[in-house]
Length: 104
Image (tube, rainbow, N blue to C red; front, side, top):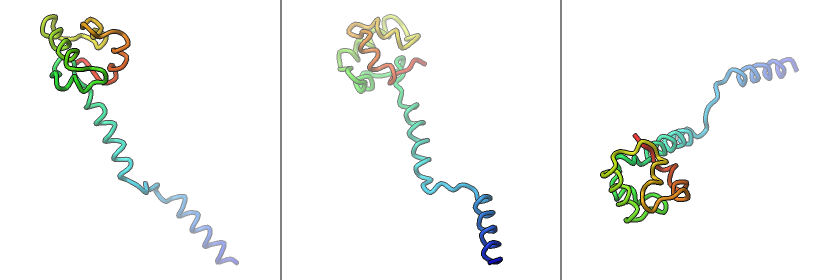
């Protein structure tokens, strides 16, 4: 009985001192990668091409061209909300795309 108790004590001590090991290290790497990738995938309104802009939800060729035209005529965007000044983009469209774009 004494051996059993001392064996349990040793096992419990090992369990307490054992470092936590992630059984699936690829899972934590992929979540970090997707977070990083998500941040990198934001489209910069001041440098985006028409091809990049059409990838935004609800933005077709004409709206993408209007964004580029606005940028060329007025100058760089100072904030994402300025998109509402582009012909064809209102508050509703802004809410759809604002999480996909940024201004640098």
